[in-house]
Image (cartoon, rainbow, N blue to C red; front, side, top):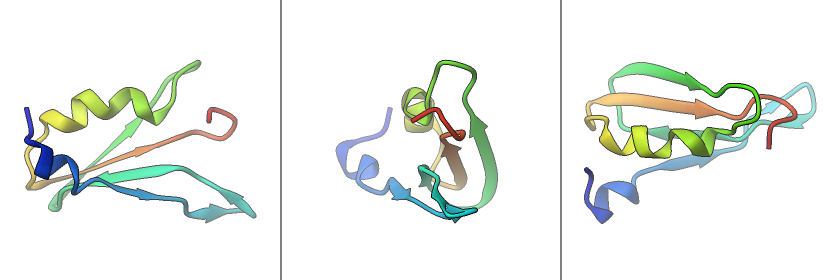
Amino acid sequence: MRSGSDAEKLIVRFPVAEDRNLHTTVHGSGKPLLLVHGIGSTAAGWQPIIALMPPDRRVMAVDLRGAA
């Protein structure tokens, strides 16, 4: 599991698509991995998985429209 200092490297973004903000979290750098939640969930559900990923992997989790 990552230390507290690694958790601080998590970036939260709100890109705009069709005049709507989309909640997105990004951690690490390198080869990208996109995590998309299922029905009834949000990107926050991926946080335990993101915490286990190596820092040389760019992990992105997005909230689908209407989820958050």
